[in-house]
Length: 194
Image (cartoon, rainbow, N blue to C red; front, top):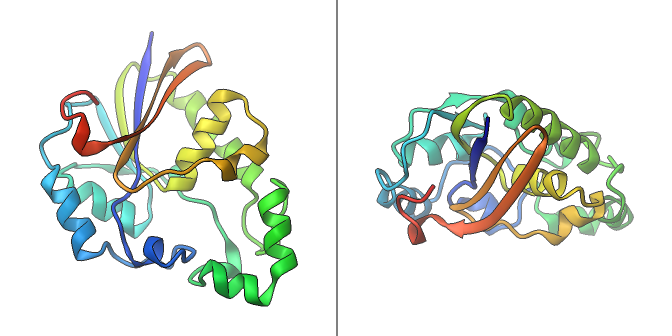
């Protein structure tokens, strides 16, 4: 049995523009319009899931998807840094940020470590691998990174070397715990191929 999973990153919002740790804000009007312009262009799938974050749920809705919220698809929990910009945190806690960016086990914000997120992604993939057919999930960029790190068997430090642009698709397919990955295609560039 082969499972095919397409991970779609959310459309643009203020947090992404400002390099702000997710603060639950809605999509920008331009992000919502871009997602809405792609509604109906995606291949039909057997199930649609979405991260519980506001921007992922709004992206799924703008894409015209009826999605089931899957808590395990949540983005990285950054604890007390939530709502702050990276520059603000760097100004207050430069050593903590540098440690966080270099040590996948670090949790200076009191939330979840990068390694913890990667382990959660592996657990989710293990479960998703038991579902035949096509799954589409709208998830935060950091969850996409965690999946790619897991699929490639890369070290946790590779997490920060992956850029995931808004409204891009990363596809994984496989069976029996062996996955292949196709990374970061823009949604508008491959209608019908998801």
